[in-house]
Image (tube, rainbow, N blue to C red; front, top):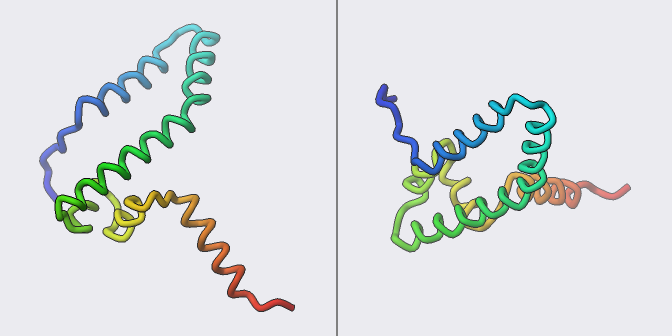
Length: 109
């Protein structure tokens, strides 16, 4: 593994700085209110980010990138997980599918 520091895109830095700014709000009421607003919006923001990633993973695949290459670009995922991302399968979706498959495999009494 390389000791070189991985470059962080400026957009990621801005998101992290925004979280730090929330933490720096000294007034408890203002901080609680602001953080709560972000958390209320987070489900939609998370969904939007997953859809954007899915779109870009599919664009990489259309450029003839391999699943191992795409997994390396995503970081900390397997090629199989990269392929699942391209299909829009989230962790929750995969767990539900696995539970359904396990339930179907159970013999009825």
